[in-house]
Length: 384
Image 1 (tube, rainbow, N blue to C red):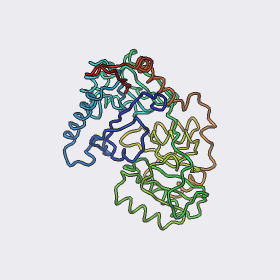
Image 2: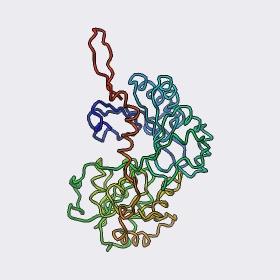
Image 3: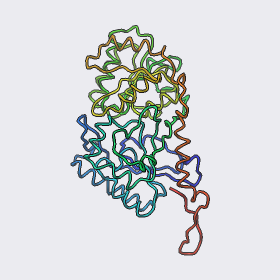
Image 4: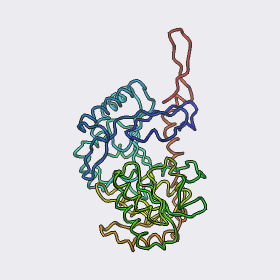
């Protein structure tokens, strides 16, 4: 957005503890709010603060509200949860609605099993917010994959707010040298194993390591990214196991993951939204092992993507047979490429989001408004 609009500034509010590890373009900044983490049972707990989750949410709510009040944005985009995790965004939405600020809900392609999502949103009384607070709903995907609000009882007027943008093409810096590794160099074809943040990826990592321990003659080495949120004891155990294997390297985190995806001949992942976008963007063969607890999101995405021919899916049956995984890893480089499947508009998400945002910015972009300072000098005011 800022690359397209030279007068635009963007402020991101995020609970991610690693947001500072990423470089942002000029005119993009962030405010860090206290983070929370989702437990396997679906509940949330404070990520770093040793305080009650309700206190954490109150702090988040206050920071969001005061930031929006003083930053006074021209467009407010909320990610995935219409009212926040537990309603901490509602006061801000109400304030901005009173000010006439357009509010947008951004949804990934898949939320959850429709029955489970309907039950959750009914419990949280979430659906009315779509009609009351939001001017637009942007779905960062395509209806051929999923309708993220299937099962939710919403009115035709709310449906008319929905626009499927296509997936968000990733174009991060490519050609960046690999991190310093002992067993893989820039000339070595490798499989990239990534489990996102790593908070719930230990079974996949264990399964891949078991495959290499069982079948040391697997043709391609694996570069495993454990994820910054994986338990430190598990990280240590996995790195120790990897150190004993000739064809496996394990690292904790790399801020330029796109470059690792770009250099790989195949991807093994759980199939979260971001990784799926990277697989499509860099046209990589992929083996997806989705989780099914606490949400069915990854399974729904992976199974539909397999039906369309984008990826291969391997279900985690709890047994995690290393021979089964080794066979899948051998076959991975022979799969079809995602680009072999023609879906119009598949990766048009970025350009469509820019168009949708510009619709709300247009009056300001065409006629940058001016304000009077106390000494009567006129200054430009930029959209935010």
